[in-house]
Length: 177
Image 1 (cartoon, rainbow, N blue to C red):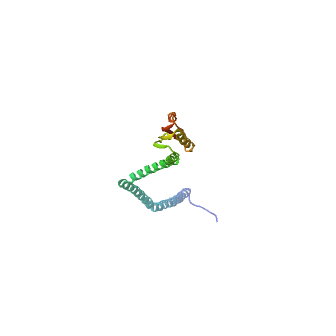
Image 2 (tube, rainbow, N blue to C red):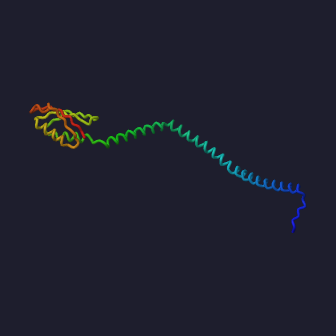
């Protein structure tokens, strides 16, 4: 069939405008429907997330206030300080040898020598030993025994210790390794 269109050109334009208007109305109606459904479904979610955030902030503030009132923060600070002190002591103890064993070694090696005073100087890692030796040979044997110990770096004996032959009051400075 022949497609005869007997409408005048003005009517044809009006008809095209009406069709375009209907298509735009259909598309805009779809967009409005999608937005309306999205708003109806998502608006409660946004509302409840806002409430949840506010409640979380309030709960965190209450927790902080309760910790401050109960003194937990002060206890936590005190525990942290004690832990730091314990770590420092542990590091210090790991790097040094026990001194008690060294004192026991000195006393065992004394033989005939009598130890009267033992003064420990921790910062210099030295101790001063004062005592009495019946003879010079006893003092020299004691000094040699101390120098042979691997924990002792040096034994310093003043010359005045060796002047007398018997009944010697002596003083030794012992430096530790």
